[in-house]
Image 1: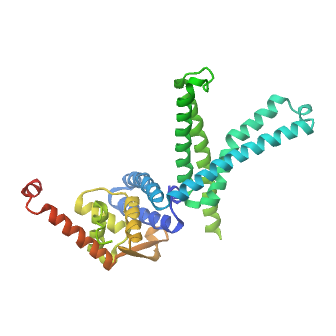
Image 2: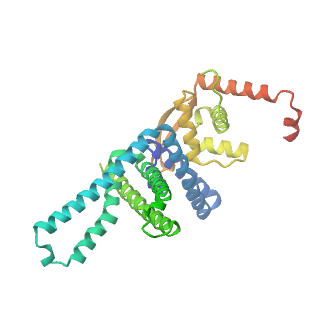
Length: 201
Length: 109
């Protein structure tokens, strides 16, 4: 679980924390057994993450917000480029002679839904390093709050397309959690790949 | 700032650092607090507090040598500065002034 701490702390801080956890884990394993020590280790790691997130938010709130905004802009730019490219391909090449329109657009849609958030998370992690995950989660919360507020305010003017708020809100929430989750997975993958490269180098 | 008092965890961590002296690092501070106060604190909370105290100039840190029992990872040692000692004294003085004459404060403990 040490990699989890690396997602929220600088390499130097992550090393000190991981070292402390390992030292105490070994001492507890010798005194109380491995199972108890392992439980303590998992609990300590999970208790540590909120402290690291709050610490980052206190220390660099504008950077966290800035990286989050960059991530949202990047996400929209990638989605826009993908859709634009797909339409150009369909216009200029006889794609439908090789695959049906349904298959083609399903693939594009899958790349948009799953590939784009992962790519956004990956790139954000390359830019924001140990602040990427906090930035993505904070931005996810803010975007969700904004979408909910927008829907509640504009519900009477038909923005929900005939659906009720109680039907729309769980869908939006699920979609946001899914997108943020995939972004965090992309950021985690970038972090693990970077750590491996550093340790090999 | 002369009116800057320590928060409760900051205060406890500073006292822990003073007690431990040269042996103050994440594990020892965490265990010292747990042993003396019975309060379980996460290592993340300790580091978040230490970072805040370091930003204020109340503590300074140095990286030690990597050791085997830490999986080859280095310790980060902490030490209270003169400015930190002044902050502890200031906080104690404020606490003492607020508690002075309050019999109830003693009867609770």
